[in-house]
Image (cartoon, rainbow, N blue to C red; front, side, top):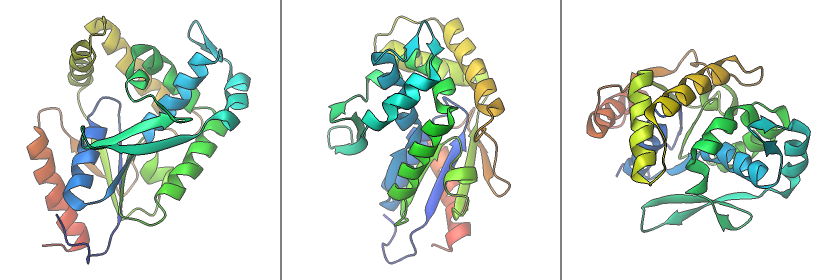
Length: 235
């Protein structure tokens, strides 16, 4: 682990869906002794709550109803020693498994494009990261949430590679989904994330691009440490 005497920074990890951003960010946080915050999980949690409370029906999002539910939603992360990572809770209920469903995946982009949803969650994220020493992953961390982050990484990978990864993950959990369905979802989410009016997905001008289409987790960590040392001067 890096010495805690060194200056602690904010590391923003942005990029496309199913690039392994969370896995990568978790590994960075563990390596440096930083806090990991999965902002994508926060938007998924709001989407799940909206689904469960009738604000989304047949894939159609009722924005007014979603906004009306925001005051009822309290989100927090709790460390799970069995997983060695944090689980997400909504109003005290564990939702870590539920938020990864294809139903949530199909609705999270329109929910996350709602201005009031983004304002609420961005404020929460900024509060979580105010003491630095944080690795935060999402779509707009380096551009909106923490434009002053000392290190910004933008992750990408071939859409077919991302779809296969997501398919393998869901099948391992027992979800009955098709690869074609996942590929369609990946492409649709890319388009929605990049074209939404509020906080669209884009690379910050000073972000470093990581294309991990054909990289192992260890290779990605080697890549990160090389750039981290260049940014911080760490040995």
